[in-house]
Image (tube, rainbow, N blue to C red; front, side, top):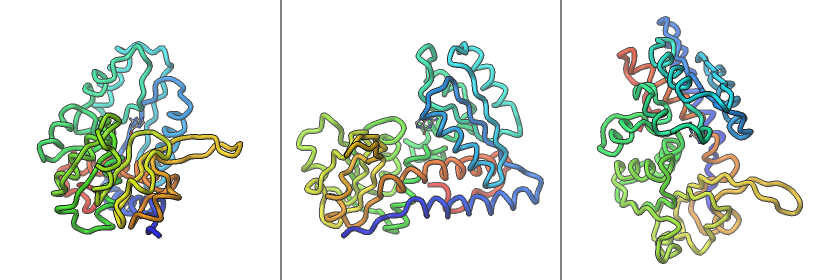
Length: 294
Ligand code: GUN
């Protein structure tokens, strides 16, 4: 049976490290601040934004929440971003996605000061990551990388397959694994012989948003499986949260696996806090916290 990688415990450790650094900064009169902007009332987004604000305060940082109505004109959101960019108390800015249909998400994200872009979605950060330069790195792939490094030590030379090609997870995950000297394959719904491609992976990161798509015989015996999926399905008359990997089948083949819930999910907000701390240290010309950046 696979070792189950406990993302919940890992995230608690990361938050502890962040809190310790924040306490050190406070002793020097510096309080890291994170601004989260939510436009509209998407229920899932509302849950995330509330959790982010709560955890930000718990690690000792300042939390600034901006909730705007769904019909807010784009110009008004851009004006708010300008104010947050100029606000010295704000070190990180996160605009919760998806944005309402009348807004151009790329335009909004690229209006952020790249140094405050704690999601790592700004085109400059995407380019910095892709060229191996110091960037703000998207939170979910960063969390996956932390767990992989913790489990393996060196990832050099391993075959990594990233299943999914989104800008938020798949693409940045592939860049991070390349930087770790993995041999990286990005697979997706149109990949030929998908199962066989996955079976070559020493590390399989599943981020496609298809409930329990990856079965036991897609996995190389002993491989490490990171399941990024968060899918709500109905089973036996109850709503359940499942990943992109069939956990029951996969865990009898894999060497290590992240569960859903309790795997990658909790790491994402922990990494958002880590990124905010990193942004604050950079803004103040201080050494970056060790172990919390790629
Ligand atoms: N919506 C879903 N995931 C994310 C994320 O990582 N960041 C932001 N800003 N919005 C999201």
